[in-house]
Length: 248
Image (cartoon, rainbow, N blue to C red):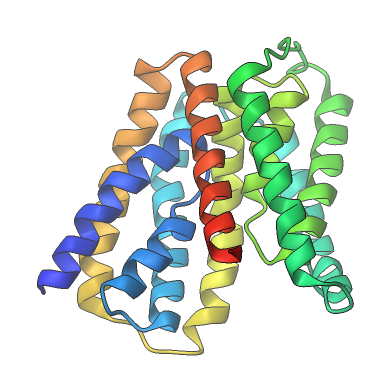
């Protein structure tokens, strides 16, 4: 019970921050749960399910505020799902360490772009063809590389959408919707490898829902696009630092 309560509080904190950035908290929660003594498969399954729970709550608010670009989100979701298995297949013949170092380099570059590069926002919301074209292109990029590296595609999607000139709030909200389905798919895969700790799930699900509501409220009502962009950059730096630590 004590471990589940601690895990729930940690989930609340990280979910709040990462909801603003539009990425799931699983990459942080998995090692935290393992450090608390939770089985690795239970940790993975629980964290991925929490991603979906958090983004469902966050997306509800984002939909109300009309921040999700559906003509971008749907093509990304479809194309990324289709190309992820291809990336996974190609990865079997490549050196995984080199791939992960390459991904870390991309994250550092993307973080620097978020922190220092000022992209000119483009008025593309009324251009159906451009939105769909962006969605297909970004979906292919994120799906293939996500499958290739075995990491969440959201890490690619947010910075690329911002680089394309999409408002950081809309980029974050759009990615949040996509994370619901990508995380749920991962959860179903890991849940078959181990049982669920329902005490842990109860406390962390509550923390995840509250964190998503708080994070989405901060993003929509309290932060401007520049602040959101800064938070995305810091989150990407954190992901890169964690990957470097694991590789070393």
